[in-house]
Structure formats: C-alpha cells, structure tokens
Image (cartoon, rainbow, N blue to C red; front, side, top):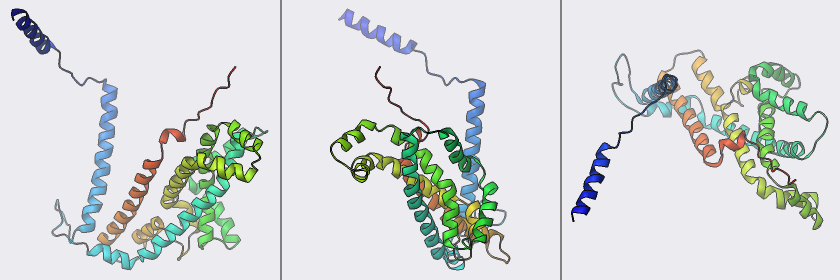
Length: 296
C-alpha cells in the first residue's frame, strides 16, 4: 500500500511540475499573423456592411439601420433584369467551359506525351494570357472582334473569355496526364483498341477528376472575369459582374441598397462556386507535377 501511495504521489508531483505550454513565436511571425488578421477583419467589415445595407430601410450615421426589409432585392431583381443577366452569365460560362475542355484537353495530352522543338516556348505562350493583366490584350482583342462583327454579342464574349481559359485548362490538365502511366495506353492498343476507344474507355475515366477541376476553375474564372467581358459585351450579353458595374456607374438616381443587394447576389453566387470548387479540387494538384522515376 505504501508503495502504491508513493507511486501516486510521484505521479502527482510530476504532473504538477509539468511546464505549461506557451504560445511562442518570433516577431516576424507575429507581424505576419497580425497582417492576416487585419486583412480578414477589413474584408469581413466590408462584406458585412454591404450585407447589412442590403437589408436596411435607412442607414445614416448609426451603427445599424433604422429598420430591416428585403424589398431591395425584389427592386434590384426587376430594375436590373437580373434573371436575364444570370441566364446570360450561365450561358457564357457553360459555353466557355465546354469549348475550353474540348480544345485544352487534347492540347494538354500532346504537351504531356510528346517532345518536340519549341515545347518550352509553347508553355510560355500559354502562360502569357494567365500572367498578363487581361486589359493589356483585351483592348486589341476587342478591336479585332468588333472588326469582324463578333463583339457586342454572346459569341464575342465567349471567344474573348476563351483566350485565358484554354491555357488555364492546359496548364491544369498537363500534370494529371503526366501522372498516368503511358504503358496503360500501350496495353490497350496491343489489345486492339483504337485511338477513340483508348481515349473514351481508358483515359477519360482517369482524367475525369482533372477535367472536373479544370471545369470548375474555368467556371469561377469566367463568372468573375470583368475586363474581357466588359470590352466585348453588348446590351444583351452582359454577365453579372458587368451588370453590377453598370448599376453603380450609370446615370440617374437609385437607392444604394439596390446596388448592395445586387452585390450580395453576385458575392453569393461566387461563394457557392468557390465552395463547390474546393470540394472537388485539391490546390496542390494544380502546382505539383508528379513524375514517376523510371527504374534504372
């Protein structure tokens, strides 16, 4: 009994003497975390103020509005014809996604499986529309589209958004294709499968996660693309982000709450797309290329 008592007392002494954990970080780390917290607090404040304003009856020099109402959403829906704008946004986005995959996936396959002179130069060309600000090449692109009568219509908006979307699909799909063992395709050809059968029955199921990731990211990018759409859109081909800009800058007097309501609708739409994208997309897959080392 005495031995057991001694053991318990020793455990209690060791437990009481155990040092408490303290949050220790360098001044640089505290500075970085402080900047991150400051950024998110500002972002939360801006988004929160717009959200509160969209439901407020009147809001003048007080912490909260005098009353709450949802009538501004109905007024914005009718005043800015949001149903037609959302339909156009979905039409443009889906068309850009489909065409980008049809062009980008075969091009990514060629870049991943073939070595040819100028391959690095081709990669550089594909990177330019992604790295450069869209306004730098959007103005000459819009000039060409207007010259051929394509701008001002839905087709011009789709063609303009394809310029950064196709390279985005190529750069996203190339790592996925490189991770697939080429011997799988060789085995399928040895069994008598043609090129079409190899792609549809062998490669397509393996590439489906990458194609889904590319489609979602292109969809988010197209919905949020302002510069190219603004330069090429007409009265009947405006997407939601362009309509939001016109609602803020157009002549006339309108309630600020209606513009805030439209901004909340746009933000909610983008948030849903981002949540869906993060559900199916692993960000590390977009920057990392996994190459299997050949056995020596």
